[in-house]
Image (tube, rainbow, N blue to C red; front, side, top):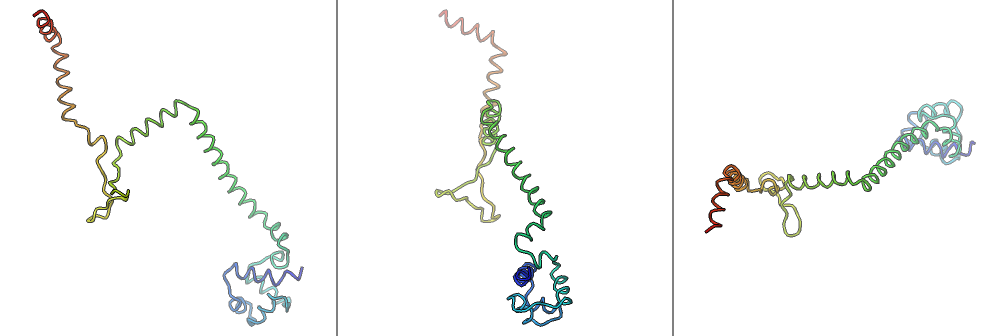
Length: 185
């Protein structure tokens, strides 16, 4: 029990970011005494022991216990870590199951495929050089983008074609009569 004291003081001191000089100053003893305690060459008086305990905010188990005893005394901390990692594990399992469901569900695959198509239609891709490095606008420092597929659609031609089809549909009978007359010739 006492054989763990020096190593535990050194560990706790370092964990709290204190030097031997800092700890000695807080306790009211000299640095060499702290060094001797940590090496197991000296042991503190009861009043110095209490001051070391207060300076390090240490429990008796943290000061005198074996690594196993110290670990067992920190069960609340360990349980908190288990809870934290348990949630992460559960989230990971849920994500894996969700992905597995998607891989075997045609309707979800169709939705993902449609989403990808829409993304490609409306997304403005980065302009890159022949090495695949994004082209940077020298004035703004922002990467340049290319027009999206949607931006490149020839709306004027589509509109003209739509008007022509609308005209043909509206005048179908007259056009049919003209076509029938030409066939007779």
